[in-house]
Length: 109
Image (tube, rainbow, N blue to C red):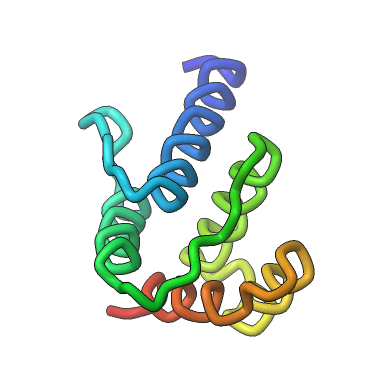
């Protein structure tokens, strides 16, 4: 797979994952399945079912890409939970609790 195809696939995956969190709908293809994607599916299902979860407003492609990259970095231990929550609260003031919940779910065994 070329770098362009890989980057395009990651962008599509990022947009799809973020849109699912924002809209509460899950659509995944078997070609996009990975441990991270499976974990995000679990996170999505949980926040979708949580009436107290405040949906992070991922309104632009840039917001969705940023969110996906942050989630993946946390999942892969490239950043700490504290960094993830702080960065999220900076990017989306007033949504610290939402980022904390997502972080807890991403890091849960």
